[in-house]
View 1 (tube, rainbow, N blue to C red):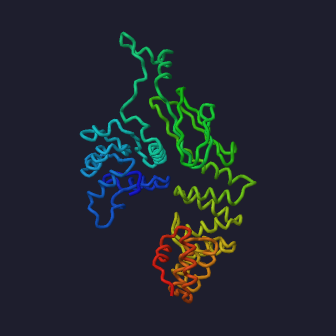
View 2: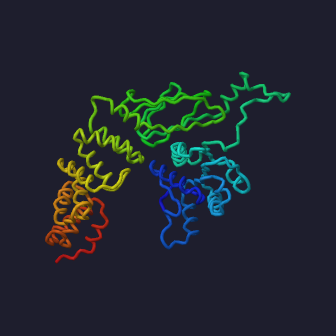
View 3: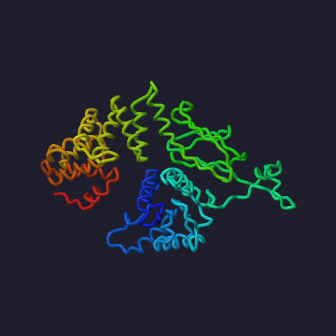
Length: 413
């Protein structure tokens, strides 16, 4: 198992759990949730226990129904006894009680009601930070308000407005701002340059003041693209900010004059990885209209595999054909696949072969393996095992295990 997050939830909250899973995996956080990831024939209890023990973060979708769910309690017990970082994602105002209160009261909390989806980006930022800094606490549990006043000898709260209280607050309360951006960014906090962050890297910055003023600039376009955030810490000692730099860059690029089709296409890829399909499509369409073959391929791929749009093989083929005019390797491979599998066209294995060959000649590993097997078995082309062996060798040199398996058992005629 190579997942990072185990998602525990009651069946009544399955839609929310699935939405959370999609949002986290769009941020490249691998998740495990039942029943999606239970292997056929596996013992239900054993596989769940293994998934919890091997995870890095235990996420519980906390609600009225999960509090009384026998399965959720059992999963939480395993996570608790395994010393896993536990994040309760609270989707309704249900109060903690019983054994759950004992196990969750001092854990990392996110109050996400009444609109859980508005907290998905913050949840992703918290988990990314925990994965990078597993020993750091980030959020106070609900209902707990850290004392902000200093009590005098007579029991009165003398420090609430007093200078002494403010000084103590500045000296002993550790304030932090945690920042994650979906594209490389340069960070300025309270007027001080903090450095650069790579995409999806988390910056963890300490602040001495009781306020924060964050300025985030695009590494790609400098001060032409800027995101700003400001506020006060109030009762929270940590502020978590997820910067959507890709959207800010898109807004800039769509208005800019001196831009390249490659820049817009690269931005579309970021949106595609995040599951923001409409933004991705908008970028790809603009880049393709500027003659970017990679963008035409990306549009074809979206329609070919139904990424954010309904599968439409005819539209996919048209975009692939546009990209093929520039001999774009992946488009050649996928156009070959269209004819090989008969997707939206009459199945024509012989017609697919030249496309696979052109893709293979341009270094596409999967196309090299496909050409090799077609030559080996005589699919749409005459059998030629000598040529097949050469293509197996080329694909194996790129790490294709299936090609290596053929070569390991190869017997020359």
